[in-house]
Amino acid sequence: MENKVFGTLNYDGGWCKKEIITFWKKDCEVKINVSAYENEEPNKEQMDSYIKFKNEIDKFSEVTLKKLKEYMSEIEDDIKVYCNIPRISENIFDYVTIKEILFIENGSFGIMCDCKWDSHGIAVLCTKTSVEVGMQDIVWLES
Image 1 (cartoon, rainbow, N blue to C red):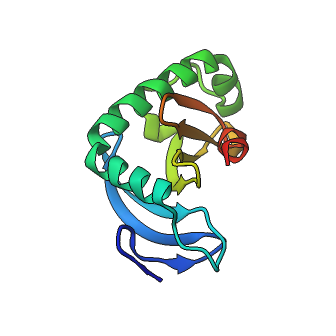
Image 2: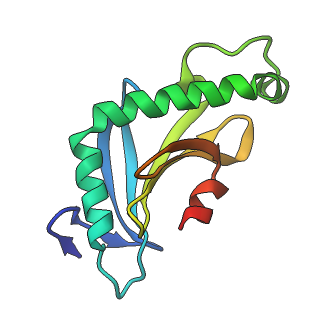
């Protein structure tokens, strides 16, 4: 599908494409996933959210990185035990890899990540009013 905002998308459980972004001070290849059925196009909220994300990527990167570090600090003991390390390094990418950015029907989006301490991964959920970090369930509950 060709979309006026997202560009060329292929259907894979949602409308998807690969994109290289600079996020958390690193160039990352991520999957952009627009939550929709195969017979649906991205809705206005998803397109507006993607435009805002692209236009304000530096701000989103800074805010979400801060929230991720706070979250990791809160569960630091669990991370150290699971990863069998004495302390957590400052390099987030030692533990977390961005895999996908999921644009949800209501205009929120989730930054879906693999992490070394949880086989299910974690997510950073960005709504119109807040940023929350937790297990990936926080994004699925939002949609």
